[in-house]
Image 1 (spheres, rainbow, N blue to C red):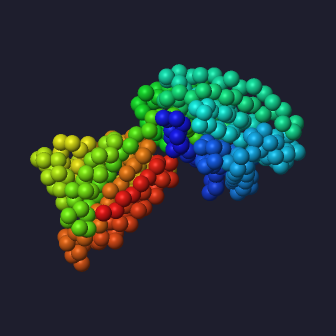
Image 2 (image 1 turned 30 degrees about the vertical axis):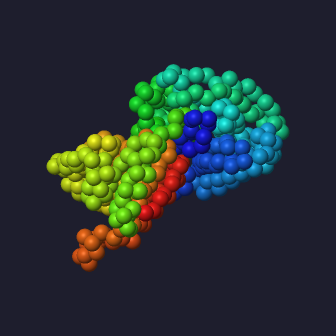
Image 3 (image 1 turned 90 degrees about the vertical axis):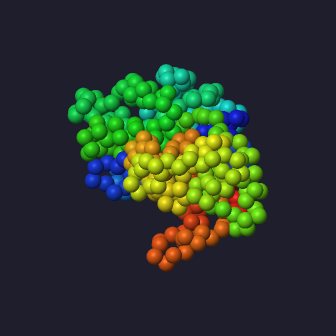
Length: 394
């Protein structure tokens, strides 16, 4: 997620493959430009499907995003790409189409498209027609638009496999643009992340294909939102004397506070001079119950719970099928997942390096090293989601 004044861009992309194909003929790239603080999203759709389409779309998206991130003018980058892409002699169309969304630090979004369906913008739950105009670059018709960004704007860049869903099945001529707009408008005010919105749209697309997509289909969603910090502490410090310092730094941080682990929650309760209230209900038989502590937003068990959160995080970065579990369940892992995946933009981990004697039993699969690895991998997954992560060890 990249700063846009006091806002950031939450980006989530998801694809489904043409039936019978191992590789997707669509490809997307998301790249941050460190020099000018912009974020660039490129969605390319290779002609046909399978290996050839995958190679063409991958090359197209990588070349365009790399050139733009290096500071090349967008017209020059598009011209280079347009000159490079051949035209199929039988179909008379380019071997790869593309959509570029560039989010600028000046709080603007610039959209450049070549033969892909027009990008959708939802603002206040309503469709806003972007002011596209046509330019000719190297004999190819490119459409462009620029718009000011507002909080809660949601952009949907799609490949034509989304619009073609249901041709001859649910619809005579496919899923029309207005149908897509109406469908996604119903989810606008829920506050789902960009990845979840992409998942919802892709799952409906797959349903319209009756689970047998006749084309590759990709959705790239960009959701403009305010930055939201969340802080998570797990494990007591290596030296007991550092407990007060660790808790002081943790609770001084702006945002929500998650405390993980029995010993850690006891220390937090002592620091806050509040009573810890354990819950008794198991919402998931494999996840220990949570607890209540005034001054904390969530108190959970430690390693077992975080391990489940990591499983959800891995899946989130793949097909996001597990979101149906963590999005609604009330167990500690699901509650943490919602806070970290849906709400947080900036996450601060406070990790205690004390060795828990209970974890040194050779009959238990939990070790100090495993706990450290869990936190490390979870933080990497969250970075891949676009979160801004800091990890402090004590």
